[in-house]
Image (tube, rainbow, N blue to C red; front, side, top):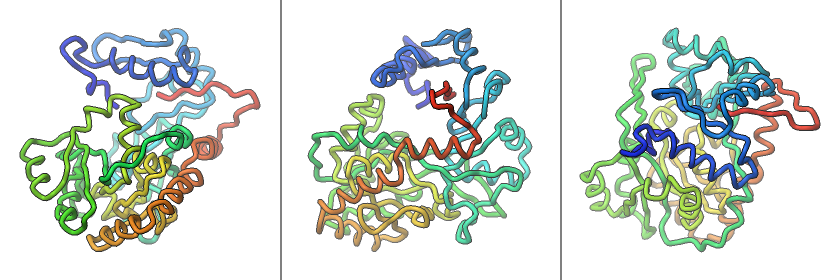
Length: 355
């Protein structure tokens, strides 16, 4: 979550509140004194571990993970072991490489290993350009399944999702075709869904206008503000765990180019034992579908999936949790990632830093 989302008049760039957010979460996992947040806007500020200590940690690190590629690499990030690029939003970097964007190549060159949530890249049905210079290892969101499974929230009536509505940025062109980043284009294709089934649907959204809300409500959707709970870990978890399941869409670029991307949020719904009905991106080539998890491309497939889930909710709920444990377990995912990045961890765990 960007620091700017915590900004207000007291904390204009949001850094102090972002650091407090990290402290509250990591403190739950006995990491109170083992994190550092480096705020780069304005004067350099360090929260948590001080500058000297965190720079020593970079020197000793078995691996530094550049999550989402959200940090501009600096020399200190590469002083230790592997420097890993972990791409959570595929397509844009691959298209930029294909289109000869030098800045993207220079950025990726600074990493020693490259990973992507686009698990269908290179498959016959994927149109995402496969990078020639780099090997992009497929991976997915690691989930602490126990954190989501151990809850006492009974499911409410609606299927829900949490998303940005309108993001008019990062359109890209591939071989003369334009691909959109904003999810609202895909949501609009299924605008009449509430009228096609007796099931209720609720969208927890940000980045929308009142006119967007009014239009959705007129078509039978419930709409709530995502930021009212998404800044709080417990409230966010409760929202997902108390949902009947998730119905959602993906970005146009992932849908039409079939990247194989699968939502980190959808993975937590599964871990909570909440069935997921999500737009096909090619992920069904690597994840089991048909019970607990459903992929769709057309309205009829959505209606059929919702009907199937409601016909035996308990069975689909159990299977959703099984899929999470079998395919998203954090220890399994991260161990494989580190092995493929060439990181050899000794028996006594070495220090890893995520930037």
